[in-house]
Each structure stands twice: as structure tokens, then as C-alpha cells.
Length: 181
Image (cartoon, rainbow, N blue to C red; front, side, top):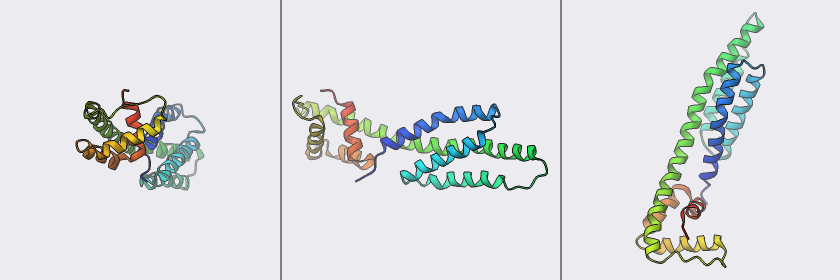
């Protein structure tokens, strides 16, 4: 079974919207911003790891870079703090880019499937395949509709492409969102 694409896309989108607040915290020079940033990086790394995205290693590299900046010997404590803050702030943009690239990649797949589903629904409706009885379970209806699509000569290639892109359950989810009963 293919893992969901919609779920990580939503989670990564949420993480992207947290970055402006982090940058604002850096701008205000909040005393706990380094701790917050390292914690945020750990969370992001865990998310990438959960979904088996190799970007977890890149994020770990940025975390390692920040941790190593703590170990540089300096005579003045304030100078060290400035160096560490600078290293953290410099890491925000590349981390944001990694996150944005992965989010965009997932959303592109979702949008491709959404477009395919919209194209599939036109001939399916014309062929009379979409006959929903409110007395039946909606999930069972969506499953049976997907089976019909897979057996229909005209829409089979498109539905198989959609499933190959994001998986059966995400296709059903998008189908449920796009269908007009």
C-alpha cells in the first residue's frame, strides 16, 4: 500500500506557515530563539523521517551545524551568542527552501491527480457510472466507483496514473472532494 501524499503535504504546509513567526523572533532577538529554532528543526526532521523523506538528513545537517557553532571557543559570551544566533539565522532560508520544495512537489502531485479526476468524471457521468444512493455507505460507493473506473476502457489509463502518483486512498479522497452527486 502506498503511503498518503495528502497527509504529509498538509503537515509540511503547516510547518511552512510557522517560519514567519520564527523569523520575527530572530528579529526581536528573543532570548530563547535558538532553543525554539533547534526544537523546530528537530520536529521538521521527525516529520521528514516519519514519511521516509530523505530531506531528514539535510535538516539533521543544519542542526549539526548549529550545535557545532556552540563549540567554537570565544573569550566573550556575548560574542559567542551573536555567532550562534547568526549561524541559526543563516540556516533559516535554506531550511525553508528544503521544506518549500518538498511541499511543492507533493502539492504538484495532488494537483495533477485532481486534474485527472476532473477529466475522468466527465465521461464517467456521461456513461451513467455515478449513481449514488444515499442509503448506501459513501466510502463503499467510492470504492465501487473506483473499481468501475479501473474496468472502464476510456478512463482506466487516467485512474491508474492517478493511483500510481499518490495511491488509492488519496485518489478516493480527492474523488470524494471533486464528485458532484
